[in-house]
Amino acid sequence: MSLTYTLPEGLPWLGGAFVSSAWLLLYQSINVSSYRKAAGISYPRAYADKEEQDKSPAALKFNCAQRSHAGAHMNTLELLPATWALTLVTAAKYPHLAASALIAFVIGRVFYTRGYSTGDPQKRNHLFTRIGTLGYLGLHLSATFVVGQAIYQSLYP
Image 1 (cartoon, rainbow, N blue to C red):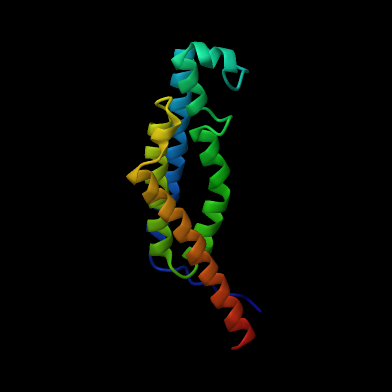
Image 2: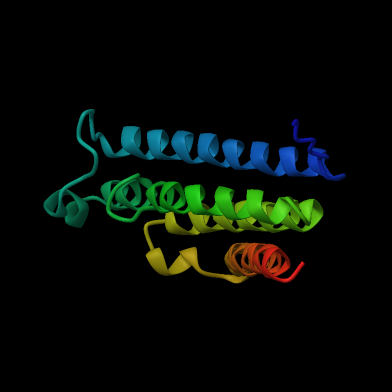
């Protein structure tokens, strides 16, 4: 017995959304590197310590952009596995919705990164960041709906 799967229409949009999230990570990595250089924080140190941060605005900006201490890049890395999983589940039934929500998430993360990297963490939250949050929550809701519907249909065919 062989199983046959039909890929949903709209798959290229989904691919584009996933590729955009890879570009987001590249942008964030370059951003972190530029702030690292400006702050004079050499590898393997992951962040500027509190004393350095208090003395140097460049060190504060580095920490805000950095992968550690809940900086923009680290926060995105923490969210991506769940975001990608939710996107794939949603795409099984609604690929255009999944792609749109992931793109909204990516756009929001770009603005989140730009705001956070100013050194003022409050600037990470504004209108475009909220669009990303809506995309993220939309993926949670739509994936839950897709899974719930599939479970319901398997129980009551």
